Image (cartoon, rainbow, N blue to C red; front, side, top):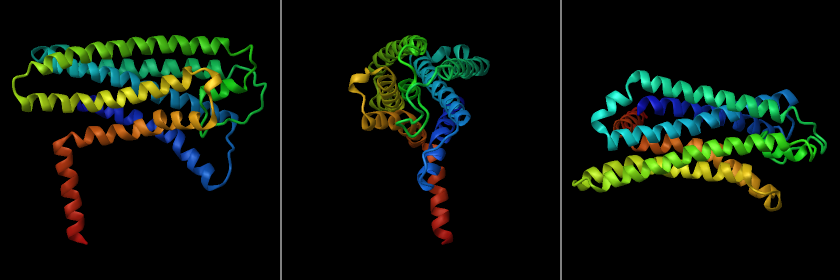
Length: 254
């Protein structure tokens, strides 16, 4: 679990560092400028880290399924080598996904200016600037990616159904509470991430508005990555004890 949490923390940090510092810089200097190359780089790295986050959350769901439903087979199914291979596959898939979307998006001719109605370079906003007859290919690629991610989501739902069935059979109330406290935060963050990201990329243009687009983008690009470390660390008793010790030592020094 801690190995996957480390990978998840790296993806969270990367996705936030891709968008937030530039948005803060523009806000402080009262500008909205970003170079064409910078926009392409921002889109690539954002897609890379956000895709890796989704794949890692899917793997973490499988980790919970094995640990709760097949605990005696955990070392066999999720040994150190298997975990390393799964994490490498998640990062490699995210890289390929980001590369395809970035290359496809920035190959489109822009017919409607160069002003994005967003605080970072996002595919739906760039497609609004492209010629209406040229973005069918990127829409198709988004649909294919959405189908793959929907498959992952179905796998996650099926896994959690099995997990909850196993948890409800635990005779100890303390055991059930421990299992639910491990799974529910992961499920809550995952649901928020999937629902907002899917709606932001697949919603029809007729219901699009600047305020709605901004709210959705903030939820899946900033709020979810920021919540992940908080939720998972608060469930870790050792980490909470270490933080408490550091805080008490700091107060004693002052």
